[in-house]
Length: 535
Image 1 (cartoon, one colour):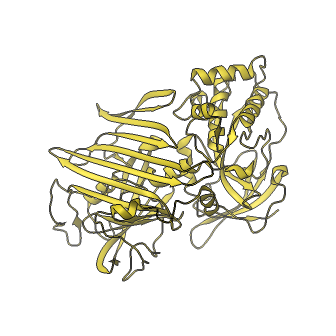
Image 2 (cartoon, helix red, strand yellow):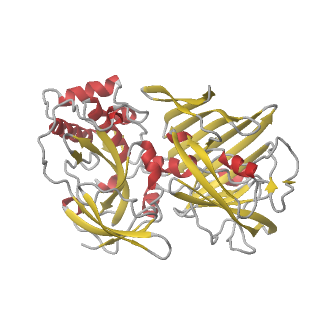
Image 3 (cartoon, one colour):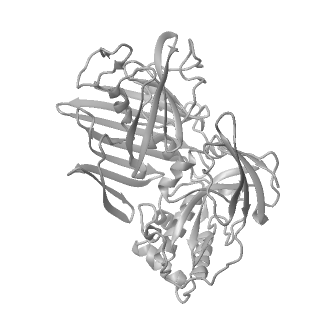
């Protein structure tokens, strides 16, 4: 049912607001107006490239000092001090209030503690959808990571990530309903948590033309990335009628770009994204206020819609479609597989790319389906469990065995699972976080359906991966962001448990592959992608 929200909204909001980004201000002045290269209010439309917005801690240090801004001997370079501070910011999507963020930096002896909280609210017929993230991060005075604790709550469902540094490695544990595991990775030099990396930029100093790279650990997704930044210019701004000057910093990581306005004391007064997300420095009262009401889920869907120049009739019966995508960041950004083939790619003067893409529905099986369990696995992780896909949980395993009992044919087993998930989960505008949550509550959106299908299929011995991309909605008359699974049954085949499709229609366009971290890649497309229907 396309009208029943094919987008894991809250998961994408996590990506947008928490995955990578600094705080948005130290002072308690409300920032409003329009920005330009000269005299400007901070929260308007600047001329630099927008990008990603999210929560975290600001402030900065070259040394463990307090007091006023410190000028280095090198002319034009400023090193903001590392001091105790508390900051609030309002978060918005295309001008509509989504929530707020709060940060507190506390320095005590030889430790720096950063507490951060992000809160977001969406209205839906099923009730307000509340998402919150609370994190405490411990750093040394020279900003080396010592540990953190992150609690994520999505509509009452919780996930906890705790980490510590031990013997040159980062040891972290992830726990959700029915899942609790510890993992470890090497701690590379200079590795910063995504929630506090702005401290590292400020430690390096603020100077026009300066640039650098920072290795990141993205806490919500437990993934490594690299952030590149460049200080573009100094810009005169107005904060509630008072003149000020800010450094304008561009940054990008994993294909996501953002622009920050940072004062000399290290305060971030604004962050703007090309997806339409914005963070504004505000007072505590203004940041927490929803006096005009929270944005509705349906409005959020509409604002993230990708519209073609004309409607597509009977999309679920489409077996072939030819499209042109524009504003791509690189020519290889759209995956190629047996269903979708890039036909032509062009580079444009603005350095973006366009691609003509032919997409087909699933063809008939070309091989005899493999028997259960499937023994040829290209990646063992496609049979493993995770915090969101608890394929080894006893409840998941018991149901999986019940559904596939007596059927050694892997494809027929996948069809049984697909049919059961479609028939037994209500299509609701709620994000139930994990496969086990979806099973217990029997409702959810596309991510919930996909996670539960993936867990059940993996438990049956079918290698399964999560696909994120677009699908056409006749209700919204455009493409919406969506998730569905692919199974390996001797060959890869796509199904859609949200729509009850054993053979996905041609409007299913793959943009990324993988579990939670792959959704990070979708932020490269949201708010940027345009599509033209060719045939």
